[in-house]
Image 1 (tube, rainbow, N blue to C red):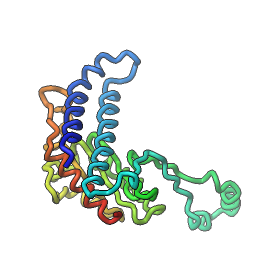
Image 2 (image 1 turned 60 degrees about the vertical axis):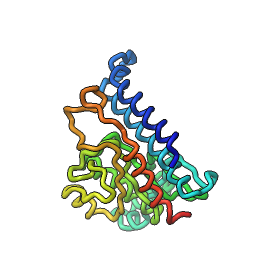
Image 3 (image 1 turned 90 degrees about the vertical axis):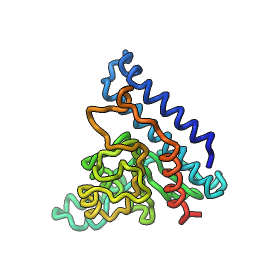
Image 4 (image 1 turned 135 degrees about the vertical axis):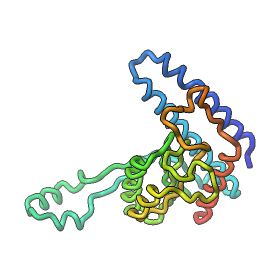
Length: 234
C-alpha cells in the first residue's frame, strides 16, 4: 500500500475541509455560500476517487500505461425501437431525417478505461440521499445500454442513504429504501463511503465543531474495493 499517497490525501482533505468555510465567507464574486461549499467538496471527492483508482490499479501490480482516467461524455443515441413505435408517421420521418441530433450526452464524474476500453463509471458525491440515488441509477441505466459490461460505482464522502452505509463495513446491509430503489433497476451498484457516521444536515463537517477526520482505514478499504472491481479486467 502506498502510505505516502494516502498521507497526501488525508492532508489535502484536512486543508480543504477546515478551510472551505473561510473561503466561502471571504468570497467576493457573488457565488452563494452553499454553492461554494458543495463545489469544493464535490470536486475534492472526485480527486480522491481518481487517486484511489490509481492506487487500486497499482496494488494489483498492473502497468500504469494500461490505465486511463477521463471525465469525457458518453453519447447515448435514441433507441430505434422508440422511433418505429411512434404513432405519428410525420414525427417518425422527421426524427429519421434528423437522426444525428437525437442523443443524450451523459458526462460521468470519472470514467475509467483499461487498454482504452471504458470499464468503470464513477459518480462522486459529497453525500448521497435516496432522491439523488434515483437520478444516478437512471443515468447508469442509460450507460448500460451502451456498455453492458460496465462496472458502476457511487463514491461518496458521507452517506445519507440510511442503514449502515456509514459504518464503513466491508459488506454493508444497506437500507430498506436504497435496496427498494435498486430492486427496480438492473444495476449492480458498488457504494464506497469514506466518512463514518450518517450525514446530518445541521452538523456540516466543514465547521470545526462537527469536523470528521478522514482515516487511513477508510481509504485502504476503498482501495481494496476498487482493486476487486479491477480484477475482471486484468
